[in-house]
Each structure stands twice: as C-alpha cells, then as structure tokens.
Length: 346
Image (tube, rainbow, N blue to C red):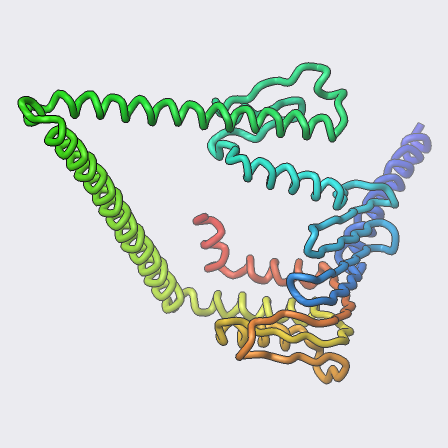
C-alpha cells in the first residue's frame, strides 16, 4: 500500500516538474529569444514605399507590412496561420467610399456608437437601421451602389428642405416688412426704397453680428488655449523641479537611452535627406537619426537641409530586440518609490 502511494506521488511530482520546466522554458524563450526585424524604404514623399518584417523563434510569430502613398497592408502569422491581416484592396475600397460620401456632404454623427455587422447608417436622422437579410448576400459593388444611391438621395432631400426653409423665411420677412407702420401712406417708390433699405440694414446687421460672434469665439478660444498651455507648462516646471522627482526622471531617462542602445539597428546602410520649414524640427530629427545609427557606421549618410522642405532617401536596416532588457528596465523603474507613487496616483 505504501509503495503504491509513493509511486502515485512520484508520478505527480514528475508531472509537476515537467509543467514547471515547460513554463520556465516558455518564459526564458519570451525573455531571451530575439525578435529580429528588417526595414527597407525608398522614394521621396509623397511618392514612397517601405516594407517591414519581423519574426520571433523563426516561424512561431511572423509580421510583414508594406506602406506607400496608396495605403497600408500587413499580415501577422502565428505558426504559419493568418491571425491578423489587411489588404490594400480593402483599404482602397474604404477610401473610395469615404471620399464619395465626403463629396456628397454626408457624414457620420461622432456621438453615435460604432456600427456593427449587418447594420446600415441613416445619415439623415443619425439612427441605426438593420438591413434586410438579402443585403448580406449582395456583392461589394452592389453594396457600394446602394450606399451611394442612398447618400445621394439623402443629400438631395436635405438640400430641398433647406431651400424650402429659406423660401419660407424670406416670405415671412417680406410679409412682416409690408406690415411696418412707416410703409403706410407712402407711394410705390417710397415703399420700394424703404423695403430695399430695410433689407440692406438687416443683412448688414446679420453680417456684423456673425463677424462679431466669430471674433469673440476666436479670442475666447485663444485665451482658453493660452491658459491651458500655461497651466500645463507651470505644472511641468513644478513637477520637473521637485527634488523628489529629479531622481526618478533621471532613472527613466537612463533606462530609455539604454533601451534605445539595445534596440537600435545593428546594420544600416543607404542615405537619407531631410529638411523642414522649421530648422528646429530638422535638427531634432537629425539628432534622432544619429541616436539610431550604430557607432562607427560608414555605410549610411545623412544629409540635413535647412533651406528646403524635403524627405527622401533609400535605407535598409536590420536589428534585433530582446524582451529581457525591457522587463529589467520596467522592474527597476517600478522599484523606485516615486515612480510607483505616480502609477498609483493615476
């Protein structure tokens, strides 16, 4: 009996040891197995193209992406299967629909909830309408035709209603003008002059009120932005100069620079020419590039233009990232009492 019990305990212990070993193996693979990446790009904005590839543990996780002036397409594979993907065809179709609806003056209400599958949007009344079952059986081209037809009809109806309201207001204004006391007892020419004068005065007053309202709104917005910026700036200065925060900020800065050194490309070649209308932006981006370029690299050239606004080049880079550096940096930052206080306060 005792031997049977010991045998069962031995089997349970072996199973637990195997499970613990597998967990440790997976954890070590996640932390120390490198994520290798490659980025290639060429062209001159707005005519450009770039590709990005990354993989982890050879075939376990793969990511491919392509971006150009026509849009973005990407594929994420886990063990060789599609897990997340989008193709340029879908992007072009969505862009075509959006541009057509924008031209018709029809848009979604931002306060509404997102539209789910099997639903259509009524732009006239800003309501969700469930489609008929046959709608799901239509092709993409037929769906697009229906959407465009509905949008055009709704835009026309809106235009007609606005025209009717305008005519109604003009009619009421004209009737009220005839009833004014100073029109009584005057001839045809006098009444006509009075009506024209009243219309000019009314339009001038409306234009003046509209301009005054816009000026007030503009200055109110400027004052609001100014107060917001000053408030945030003062809070930042107060936060930065606080003796208790200086050490924590220095720690974050050191860890960020350390991560950048570990994750920056190991190999980079090609050339890039950059320039903006603001020389400060050009200098800032130039500094970022020099942080990414490995020390002693002679296969990459960077040209900074301070007289011309341009972004062009032909660049190829390779690198790798290990998550153990990120995990260690996060752990050391979290051990800092001040940083932990920031996290808890949020």
